[in-house]
Image 1: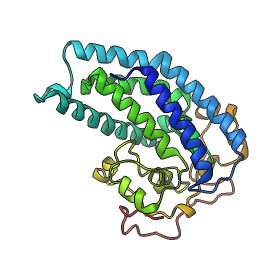
Image 2: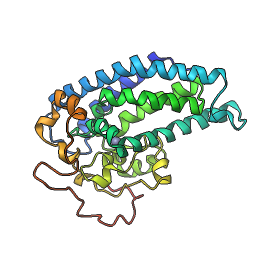
Image 3: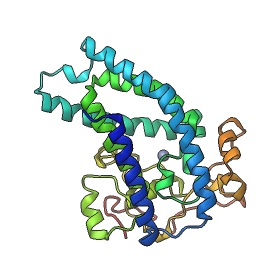
Image 4: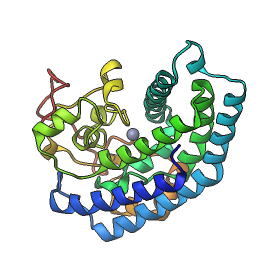
Length: 287
Ligand SMILES: [Zn+2]
């Protein structure tokens, strides 16, 4: 079993590592001032961590404990050796997170909160934990159902949690990997180019590439879109691309205010992709 402290140390170390390396080999050009953006993202992250520690973690632990006592959960339906249960639970966790992410985009009330993650005008490792605390609080309900229905064991949960956090930081990072290497890595992991497209201002591109750890779920559900040249991507949500939207207080209040047209810029334009209007090969990663 992986103690929570080890997860925290590894994840903090990866945060520092990606933060330094992405300054030297950036994938996308940035458009906002780093320091101010970093402060805002760290504040969002601190609030998100607070809610996760106070609400989500205790709820998940008790659901897991309850399911373990019965035992209850999908993982017990078919008799499997311990290693099979571990792998099965790991895959089901990642698949169900894919569905939760899709719901966050499709259900207007959830999107009000998830939008706050997407309006970050640049994408780097600090975006990885930039979530509205309301989104984190609501995820507690999903997480309780998720761990109980799957019937995941505590060691499998701790392992998934570590991989989930580590890959969330990795795929949000602005790390330029050699394209051939990234194409290969993307066969098994969600990578920065793949997730960068999910943060594009083009609506159809934001509504693609929902996977967190394994990219296979987007392939299965036909939501994969890799054929977007990275140099053409503008990060953010068009309707919330004003400088004032970058302020912490505006971000915190955003879900509770009247919502704008998300996909239209303040001057009325709807960002579209001029090239690749026919996605002939969405499984081919562009440079
Ligand atoms: Zn999203």
